[in-house]
Length: 360
Image (cartoon, rainbow, N blue to C red; front, top):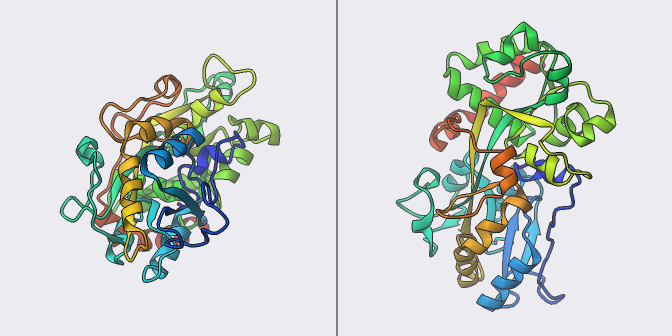
C-alpha cells in the first residue's frame, strides 16, 4: 500500500514491535528448512506482541519466521513473481485494493481457517474458494489539526465536498496513489463517491484548491501535517492530511505527557474502508504450519492484540477494541467502499489518468 495502513503509526516513531525472522533459529533460513518452522511473508508493518507470538508457538509447536518485504504493493508483486517457489507459507498484507491482482495470479491455495464463522460478514471475500482470510480493517480518512481550526475560527471539513471549498484552499496534503496506499485509497474513495464520470472533475477542483501531493504517508503525515507530533517539530503548515481513522488514537497513546483528548480529528465523510487479508501461499513448503498460523490469526488472542500494535480494527465478532480507539478513532459509520473486481478493472487506468490530471 505503497506504505500500508499499518505503517501509518509505525512511521511516527512510536515504538511498535516489528518482527524480523522472529522465533527462528540460525538454521531456519528458508520455509521448509525445518518442518516445525512456519514462515510468514508480509509488508514492513507487521507487528505482534511477543507474548502473543509465544502463545502461538507454545500452542502449535511451530516457530514463526517473519520475512518483511517492502510496502504492500511491492510485497504482493514479489510474492506473485515467486509463487512457484515461494519465500514462505503464509502471506499477510494484501488488501482490497490489490486483492484481485493476487487472486487472478494464483497466489493462494484454498483454506478455510478455524474461526472463519466469527468473521463479520462485511469483511468476507472469496467465499466460494476461501483463498484469503480477512484479518483486519481500517479507514483511510482526512485528518485535521484541531488547534489550527480553533485558532482560525474555521469549522473543520467533514466531507469530500468540503475539501474543494475556498475556505480550505491550500490546506490539504495527500499522497500519490501511484506510490502510496493511503493515496490510492483516497483516490478510490473519490471514484466511489463521484463515479466513473465524476471523479476526474472532482480532482480538477481539488487541484485548483491547492492540494499538495507527496510520495508517501510518512512525508505527508510527519513532515507536512501540522497536527502530528512529527509535523509540529518540522514546522509543518498543512492542517489537513490523508491518513487513517486510527491516527488520532496514536497521537494520544504515545504522547508524553498524554493529552486528555486527541490533538487531531477525522473528517468522517472522507473515509474509504480497507480490509486486509492473509492466505496460504500456493506451493507452500509447510502448509500445515501455514494453516495453523491462519487459524491463530482469527483467535481472540491475536485479534485483541492487533489494535495497539498495528493500529487497525479486528474483524471477528466479540474482539476487544481499545478505549482510545472508541474515543479518538472510531470507525466511520458510512465509509466509501468498492468491490475488488471494480478496483481491478479500473485501478491502473485511474492512477494513470490521475497522474496526467494532477501532476502534469
